[in-house]
Image 1 (cartoon, rainbow, N blue to C red):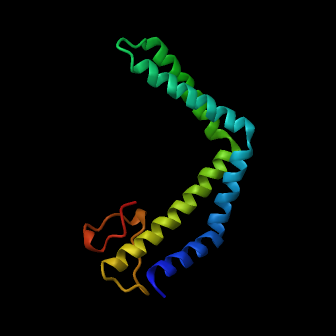
Image 2: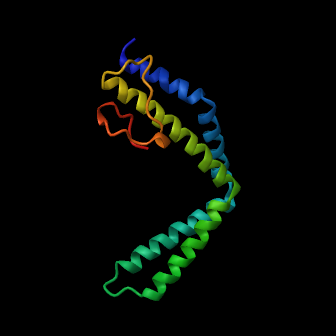
Image 3: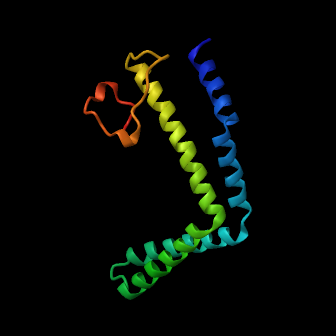
Length: 137
């Protein structure tokens, strides 16, 4: 089997993994949550307005502070949304899986034994030897 075929097989295995399936489910729930999408739309408009105001030669600091406050309030509402919380958790699980897989691949490229190499976990910290590093957390 060539490398590209092996990677495509890995891609299929990732897409069949429970963590990936939960992520896709959470992503679909986010997309279907009209309240959440409305809040995200408001957040984007505030961000655009903030950028426009701050780009002016003499920006109105009171406006900027007001927009910043409103941004923080809406962002807080978004992050309290149940669908967003589930999405963030599922995305974190997929990111963790991908970092682990990339760590294994990096070790293999550096000459480690593909059957036994094990990337360091983020909580184990850096041992200082970048030659066998699976990537910083």
